[in-house]
Image (tube, rainbow, N blue to C red; front, side):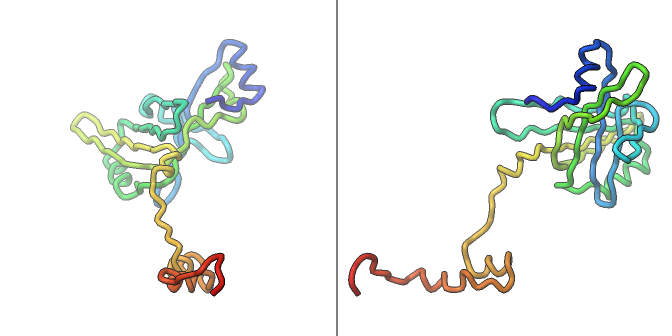
Length: 187
């Protein structure tokens, strides 16, 4: 899928040398986490992104011509026991996560307008805790996953009142079930 690219990004790619990083923003129950694959803090979009370096990893973003929901897994290694406890309480299925592809100039300046690389909803979390190290893996499903979910909407008076309290548009639907309506003939 082609992604829109700013003139600055295109010029940097054509120049031959760019540094690439990924920025990840994930929403959790009580707030948002902003981390990136570089070192140290990064200020972008009015937010401070915490550098995770090599500790932050992700699976490949799969794209096909077919309309299907492909997900990714974001992993953070070398976490402390306090981070694991926080992760257990903060993760909630269905919360959004966004991954950007960012380019940097040779001097280390962020080139404006990183590209949205992946956007999805949190699906599952796996915590691998061992004596040597601990790792948190969070799976995100593509936004297209909502196309696979059934829509449970019925054309009943109760459903209409649930969606639009006070609306009487479907109050006679139940009475029409067994009605005989002579269509096109004289009564």
